[in-house]
Each structure stands twice: as structure tokens, then as C-alpha cells.
Image (cartoon, rainbow, N blue to C red):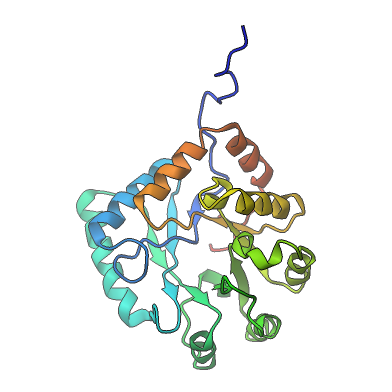
Length: 247
């Protein structure tokens, strides 16, 4: 008799990275975790998934989340105190996820940016349309000695029928970071399919969880038990630079 359970792997897939560079666990500063206690619970769950180091990426967007060191550092201190009190020994620091808007341009002009180590900067397109100045911004960041990383390119639907644009941007030096939640189909099938397209074509440089809440941890935990997760992690293992680019 055919065994319907034979396709489920015996062990969860092992993540292909241990440093998460994209998540929203700094408490109370954006649409991620609302408080330090919730952040600690999320981080404990991330540790159980195999994350050993976190570089959180609070949103920086004009009007909505105009974060800076002045808003993020106190929240980080509160988070670290909560982690210490609970004995959760995951190193947590932060950079930011910068929406491409006038606020980013003004911060860039003022040399007031919260960067990933070694001059990397995580930037985010708008979801409705590509920023008109994206190519110029990538060039300007490079001129300033920075290394731009585009957050979750698989989530921008305006590229789905223009996949050559991915190749153009990547060739211009814009690194790509896909979301683990996209591979888990947390947003839908289209995002997973595009993420797989990027992997197949060698366009993925980094991966992030993009975890905002506890349910995201559970979505990833469930995904890692699937055959697809084993295949995805094998395809990315040794190719993503999460654990080598930020030493």
C-alpha cells in the first residue's frame, strides 16, 4: 500500500545560515514586535530554528517609522535586559531597513545611516512601483563606499513580468536578499516561485527571516519539516553570505 507519509522528511531541514540580517524584533519601533517580552519569546523561537546571531532591521520610512539611533538604542537596551533576564544568549545588534524615499536621501546626505557591518546597507523598494531613482541611488551608495542589499526582491510584483530587471539590477552591484518566509509561502505562491527563480539563476546573495511576530516563527518551523525546505536549503547552502560578509 502506498504510504502517504513517506514523503515527509524524518528531520527538519537545517538552515543554510546562522546569522539573520532581516527581522523586526526591536520592540515598539515599527510594525514588528510590540514589546521586549514578545521580542524575547520570538528570539528564543528563532534560536530553536538555528539562528545564532541576529542583526535586526527596524523599518526606516518617511512619516510612518522615522527611526534613528535615538529611537532604536533605548529599545535595544530594553531588549537586551529582557534577554539577559531570561538567559537567552543570542547576540542581537541592529542596522535598519531603509525604504527608498526622501528620508533615506536626507540621511544619506547627512551621513546618518545605521549600517550592517562592513558598509552594507539594506534598502527596500516601495511595493506599488519601482522607485524612479533606484539606479542612481545604487550608484551613489557605491560611490560612497557602501554595498547596497535589496530586501525581498521576490515580493515586488511589478518585476514578475519583467524578470530581466532582476538581472540588470544585480549586475549593477545591487545584492539581493530573499525572505525565508517567501520560501515558506507565508505571502503566497507567487513570492515562492519568484524566490526559486532567483535562486536558480544565481541571483541570491543573502537570506533573511523577515520575522515580525511569533506566528512567523511557527510558519518557518512548519516549513522546515517539508521536503521543499530540504531542497531549498541545499540549493542555497554555501551560496548565501550571511555568515561571512558581516564578520
